Each structure stands twice: as C-alpha cells, then as structure tokens.
Image (cartoon, rainbow, N blue to C red; front, top):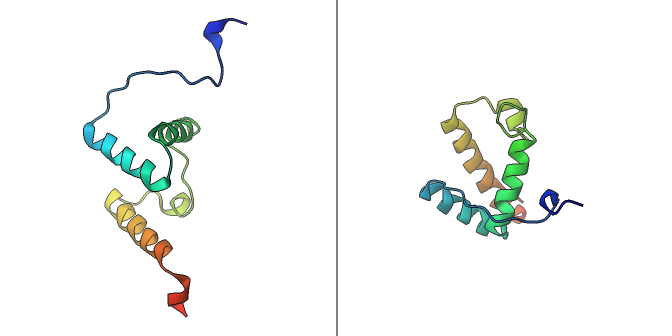
Length: 92
C-alpha cells in the first residue's frame, strides 16, 4: 500500500481563519465537551455532505424555516437554547 494514500490517519495542517471565528469555535467545542479538532472535523464532514452548493444540510426546524433572514434565525436559535435549558419540573 502506498504510504501517501493513508486513510483515517490524522494529519496536521495549517489553516488561517479570522481570530473571532477561532474564538467562537473554541467556545463551541468547550460547550459541547469536545476538542477543537473534533468540532472542526464534524463541521467539515457536515459541510462536505451538504447539498453540493457549499451549504451543510439543514437540520430540525431549519429544514422548513432555514431560508429566514439570519437575524431571525439567530433569535430563534437563542430562544430554543433557552427552552432546552429549562427544567421540566418548572413547567408543572
């Protein structure tokens, strides 16, 4: 087997991304309890599995309402995150 055709073996590379995006990615990884490497690999897989137009496949409510303006999507995401953090016992 050709050693240059390795599969599923991690490789190191250098990628330049904006500093605010890196901070956001690190925070998201920490919030999920995973490494930055895991978050980036998952995001790349999701993006590459998208519709071929460079967009990741829509999930959940975004399948129906994903075409809304970005501000509206951000507001809905924030509301849904708050709802998910609510203790079910408080609803009784």
